[in-house]
Length: 365
Ligand code: F6R
Image (cartoon, rainbow, N blue to C red; front, side, top):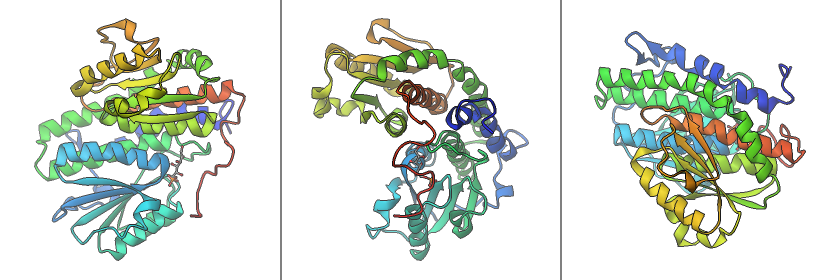
């Protein structure tokens, strides 16, 4: 059942290249362009849409944070990401010109389902990204884009998350093509780059020994920080929840520019800081933030897209991810974050698949 792996989480981490292949490849048509017609998603779904709301819980919501950056960058339509359990009680503003995207692995999360029902009652168009076929969220949405991640058994979501990201990228490219915001040529380049994530993830999975080594230094710490900007901040949120839920170590995700507005006082000699610096547009800003934590004695684990590093003295450990052109580093960086959480939990002798107090599918409020 576990395919020779000691637990489901490790199996599912390693299944990501295959899960992504199954999710992306059927949606690529001739000319390397996105094609969502077989999913029944009309090409003109964004007609009259002036606002997108993405709503979900936990890891699925973190995928939405990345989706937001991609949609706004490519479409220039305002996008908000709402925690479903908050959204449903906030009397949200929406109408027939709003597209509400719900994201859920199980398709049964009570708050996400309630958010979807609220969106329908508010006349919004609804589209869901769901893994479990025929689940309640899939059945009740106007349109469904399935992730083909296969069954995810471990409580901590891994392959469903990266497949959710791939669906958000596919939507962003398909919408941008339809809206004339990407030419066929540029869209096809983006799709080629999207396909490149699969071999890049295969390569990233070979960094498991480095993740295991580092986790020996993380397993006894009490607090740690994940920092990043833009897409990397969204990823920091995901890295932090993954570590917390299976290792029971307290951690926080911080937008790196916010450190000096309070959090820096918590960084002392030896505090682990996992710094994500995969985004070229804010790379130099990230390096200054890393110097700030370094000056307070932090143990820095740095993750970069490619191996360029102006100054190796700014970190204790460095994951140089296989270089990906464009905005695709979240896929490979996510793998590193999953491996760090996984090996830290295993190093603490915990049950990685079934962390205390948590259930795979949260069908109650
Ligand atoms: C964390 C995790 C949870 C789920 C959340 C939503 O690793 O798995 O945060 O992402 O409970 O679940 P779904 O996606 O089934 O709606």
